[in-house]
Image (cartoon, rainbow, N blue to C red; front, top):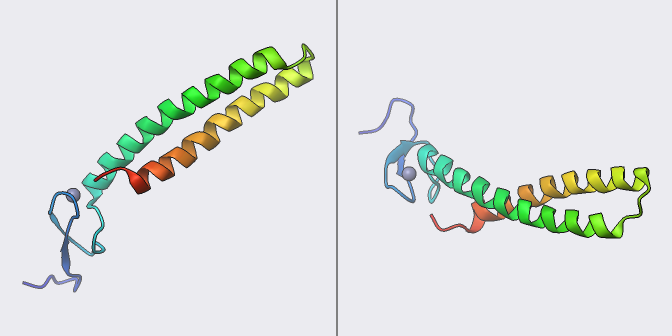
Length: 97
Ligand SMILES: [Zn+2]
């Protein structure tokens, strides 16, 4: 039976639940939320590992100058954010459904 909105009910690619207006081969909101949670957890761990490696490297390589330490700390924070964003995007793309 067609919906009053005119949008077809399309099954979710993972759970098969029919959702009106969903694109073909797309995930329903619940499955997408679960996948985003897994991607965020994975990206946090990877970003922490990468940031810790950079922090240890900068700890031993930077001169004791306070300005260098300040920019090193800033680089660590920015590196964490960038790695986390990239890994989240890749995980959303390549994690199995
Ligand atoms: Zn689903």
